[in-house]
Length: 303
Image (cartoon, rainbow, N blue to C red; front, side):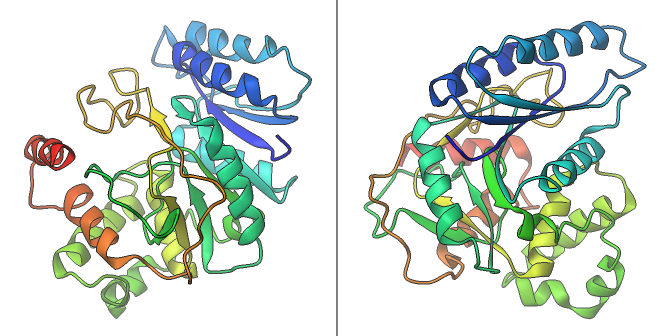
């Protein structure tokens, strides 16, 4: 495994141990560990942060470990942003996993092949490991497709893509008023939804690096390559999570599988609009309360 792996950790020794156990057979040669510091208002944080970092000291395979540790709490967005900036100051490409994302072993081969294939393709910004399509799988002509959405439970990217990351979203007010979103999205409801999201993120009401990454990719005209099967499970849903707190979500701990090799490549780097329309309806539809949406998704998964 010659691609550097970035592992983002905080205070979850249980899930971090599972991620490290899944990495052990791959024996990656270089591991960047990005860690936030304990929160001053949470007395239990120090012990959990220490226990999580102790797991890194027990790695037994030959591996260069670069520790990018914060001694004080920075918050999820600032820690991920600054950590990935530090990583891409040193390497040209990397695979990124958070402390609750377990990848199918074949995903690393998948990611490496696509990182090589699209290294000089400015319209490709990332390689995703997750596929949030809950419908029954149908025969596919290609092993992956391209989406405007930046699915980041297990992903890979290059320095040349991450350099477009715009944490400040400085141009958002002008873009919002210029009709820019209407050129990105075909649906008026989708435009309203993403306008509200980007307004909240820009104002600091939502502490999310991932929405800022989505915005940055759209600004730079970059798409994500998404496997036709789900290759990464998020095992961290629950009350210890920062955002994924709903333990009964249909996206929690989803089964993993792998496409057949050799991979079958799409003929062009273009958005799969049929799939993106589905993702907009089921993941980002502002009209449906979350509980109703999950029930609909369960029905879709059984259909």
